[in-house]
Length: 370
Image (cartoon, rainbow, N blue to C red; front, side):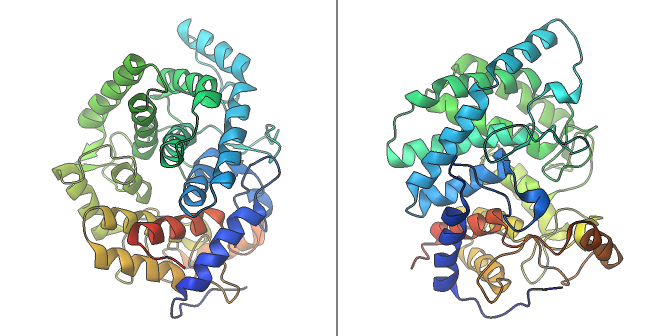
């Protein structure tokens, strides 16, 4: 087992390697594989890919981001009939099976995987894509017209399905409505509405409904909760603060959510668990989540803490400057569960493109460059 060992960060080398990992592994279609060396991750997720594209957009690789966003738009418009059929069924009061909804991951050619048993019904990726697309277009002054139909379809889809229980970021608990899912949908709808890319009234009504539900059932002791009615905090909720901005960054909900995360899932050395009780690959700490934590620290002026997060991520790069999905062997919550996952799927997924993306985004926030 190749376990990354923490070492002094080499930011110039990791910055260069991160850009290479993203651009060199991008498929001709524009899709990003989650991890090219990990069999079950050789697919493209809208969620992972959107943050990867955000990193490329910031890291002087806008053509790479363009290609991903075009791929997403094609995936959505190719399924226009499927989306309309689903919306018609929902209007009739029917309760479609999970397979009627859009999947969370696709082949690199933009096809459904056809795999039975994957945890495929997730809504957050489509909201995340709307946010990332809007940020990219604004950053580079790109023409939004080629994306309008895909955005319209995506907004209609999310406006009709946002409150439907589905799997979370971690492909777990499909019987719940998750805080991070609501946050991604809200963030995407707000972004496209503000940019004039979508029906403002429809977006506003949906956002108001999301906000009401979160206030009534999506918080515990002042902080955002893992799912409706939960008391628990989850690392994915950090994205609700930054970048989605679901609540004011200087307000009490953001402060309480960050405080709850720091108490429960942020470790003294800077790593972040997905949630307490996690057992996936032993329940380790995720560079992706440390990236979100650092990104939020940077936005609220905690620059030294943000820099420590950047250093922590870099310290777990391999000798080849590749970042893993987890930093295994470091304060595992369930060390006895590590072997079963390794026997099932192999060693910790490396390189995880999303880990490299969050490193690049945080480096850009801090002004760390080559």
